[in-house]
Length: 409
Image (cartoon, rainbow, N blue to C red; front, side, top):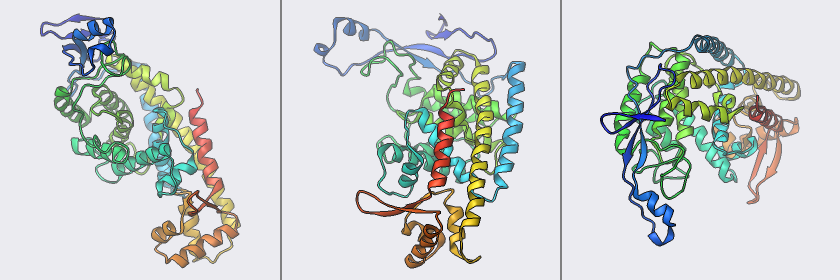
């Protein structure tokens, strides 16, 4: 429901009065479908303009949250800070484990599912399946964001993240703003009647510039800030594909830039995955001017993520303690280094071990043999007869984390 503005756009009702809602504008549609392939109803429908979103400028908008929202934001922020410190102090590479968990959960929200073994195989190019390759690309995008420029949101960083995400699957659009109208729902060939029609591509540069300016503010509570940047990004929908996964990387970048996380990745997507329908409803409410719902949803997801992350860290820690008892190797043996590296990459090849540990091929194979002998690694062969080794206990712990994340609250 909306009311017309004097400039020809239509303002969607702002039900809360606290945040600018999007507006709608008429856009002409040029169909590429032969008229004979459309029904009379469809031909009549697409002759009329469709209604595309016009996102409000938020760079200087006042953020006024309800008291109960502020309360959960504060509690979640404090917990995330503690979680970041705890994960950084552990003897196992939990930041790498959690980054992979966040990437897998973010992909699962988009119905891209894979198990820990297939993802680990795809990460080193071993007989990977399509979904696993797409999730591995998400891991690379997240790694890029945290390694360089991960503490800021700007045009270059957003495009670089999208390029890393989509380079293999859709190279023609990877790292490029869309140059066409997109929509969610309705007919695949025209936008009329769609559930949501993002802004026309002519409006993207100004909308992104405004988002970047908002992301630089320091007067908004950090977790709320990250949630709003994410929701505004999803509303702009600047790419033809990969918007959700890119937007959740952007969310992490805001948290890092605000200093809430410094050492690790908080798997907030795992928390959102517990009720993705609620998450999508919160994004819809944001477009209608309700900022509290997405801020509360992201904050609750963060609390769920830290709880799940601590459980995963405990499971990983128990595995490491068992391995310290199982491994029979000299104190200076490279087997110890490999055993810890397996938590970040639980499937390995001799070539991978040689590269990561700086060993010769023979040295890498000898190191692997020690962990096979002591029950840490098991050998397997791909359909192409490529030999690899896996750490079943680590894979099982990661799959259990994914199963817990996918359960509805």
